[in-house]
Length: 393
Image (cartoon, rainbow, N blue to C red):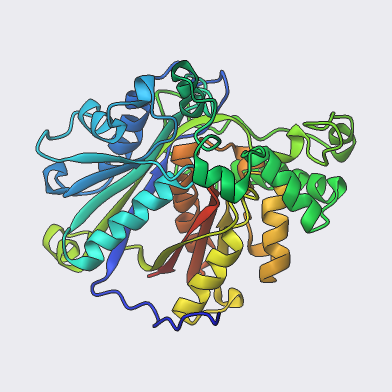
């Protein structure tokens, strides 16, 4: 079957990026572990609106990404965080779960609302306290009711994909094998991630994008390490090429982005820093799970008429090192444009907050280097990936 013909992307109105911030990222059991997720999300929201001249009542909607929505992250944490921040009750809020890309999807939904003319001002972001609610807690919560997995046991799923393990760990191992990515290749990338992150912190590159939580304002994840230290680690499972050194860190954090229409920019005296050039999402094999950034990037470039060489700054989430290395092989992107300030291996991956966190880094780095286009993509549970392309103004 031939591929369908697609017309190029043509937004009706412009969606402008006014600002994007994030909290510092706390390591598991670290500085943010005891912060209620609503308070954590509120810190990012207050940090965002506190430095922009817009009345919060003018916000049309608050869209927040979060994964494992149970306990303190349940009950629509997007709405709860807004109210916890002390903002107007008449402004609504909603929570999005697209797994690791949840807050990137929140940004994309917000941009689409503005482009369509149904909203003028959107706050989009994410929050995750993984110290309080462990990863996959929502998937395991069904065991009490007789469901060992969200997937296995559904007749259609079992017929199509069998009963093999569905996890990011299994997917990362499959990627390493399919693209012949060695443990040494992955460890070199992991070391680069830590070195880049430590350099970025030392040079103050994150200072403009970080809003503190109390007196906490420096990311806790990056550390001094070496290839020799990484070589001593046991694999995650017998025969695996993966170790903890090449995986993203379990983390806590929050993020927030302010988007506005051209009308809102004029009406409220806002200063756009970028425009949203493109938003899209694509899917791939859910067992491999983490490969979708490859077709999603290809799709986005075809839709926009851009090439990978046109992109000046790239953020791709380092769920595992092989995700990035396979993507680099397939896209031919310049590694020196990718995760230039380190990635989730060093800086952490607070699930629902990561998309808008990386978006904040993308925006500020694009400004720092004077680039034109920035691209963000994140692999997601279920085998999907978002792409967001922004153009600096």
